[in-house]
Amino acid sequence: MMKIPQKVNEIRLGGNVANVEIRTGQHGSYGSCVLAVDDGYFKKGDANGQGGGWVERVYFHPITLKSNVLKKMNGLNKGDFVVFAGKLVEEKWNDRQSGAERKAMKMEAIDVEWHVPAASVKQLRQEARDSKNNQGQQNNSYNQNSNQNSNQGGSHNPNMGGYNQNSNQNSNQGGGHNPNMGGYNQTGSQSGGHNPNMGGYNQNVSQGGGYIPPRHQN
Image 1 (cartoon, one colour):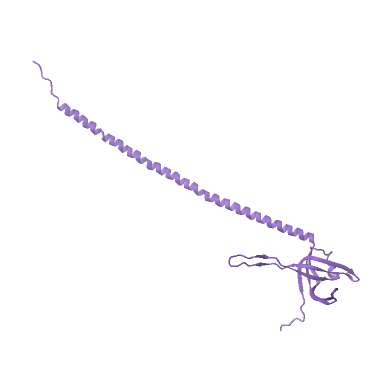
Image 2: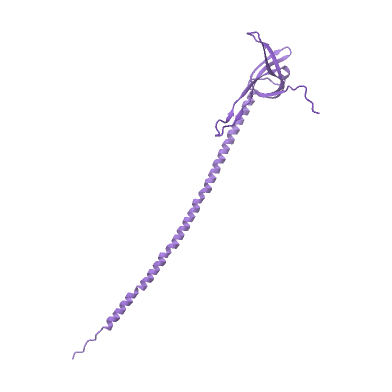
């Protein structure tokens, strides 16, 4: 059988300290701080892909700090990153000017889960930016090398085309031998053209056939 819990009042908040006030009393240190909690989100664009992008949104939550929590931290300063576990409480006070009663919901910290000093936060953020920039440069360099390799691979085709040109030139030279072969036929035609000479020889023979021997004189 499922049991319904009698009370549930638990909360966890994490962010950077925007403001802090620490006092010292009879029972130790106490105070409060304001935690800047990042609640940004990515907004989708319209059908044309416009209007989208990251939307910055930060909530500032007041945190009540007691001595048992402050003892767990070696000081608390503006810019520190802290994750508190605690509960919601209602605080009441009288307004100084009007005397009216005021009340507000605040978080009372019970435990400290994370505490990173501001100097370390700054260093970690710088390292994250450097790592992101280096990764971007490596990706750009890889893309450039890939493009160069692709261009070199594609530039081999003109060489292959040049080979085809050489092959075509060789083929044209081979085909160009046909005029020479045809020229050989012309030479053969010249040999055949000897027939006029041969025919001329026949003319000489014909002239020889028309030769009249001289008469003997008495």
